[in-house]
Length: 120
Image (tube, rainbow, N blue to C red):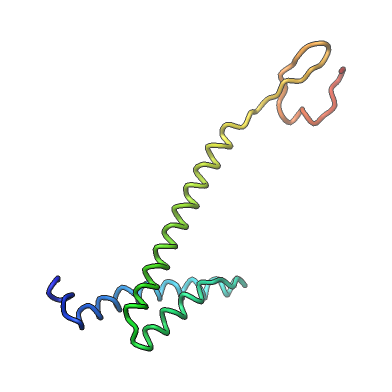
């Protein structure tokens, strides 16, 4: 494998093979989002990769593909972590509150906090 990649044509084929799946996935996502009416910056990445391949700048296309794929991975990781942290935060939300009534404190459900006290 190292001998294949050391040759210029081998490295070029490897870069093209690494770029095309990312480009194909990206184009599919673009078409899907356009059908929903969303217009995103993914089009810029797709145009960059396509133009680089057309003009023979295979390394540039591979770099853009790597940057895009890395960005997608980091975005997914951050979203998953944010979801996990939000779930942990929501699990700590109090379910009851203390309300002063009749000269003492009563524990009531949070839903009852907004309603007027029977005797304050």
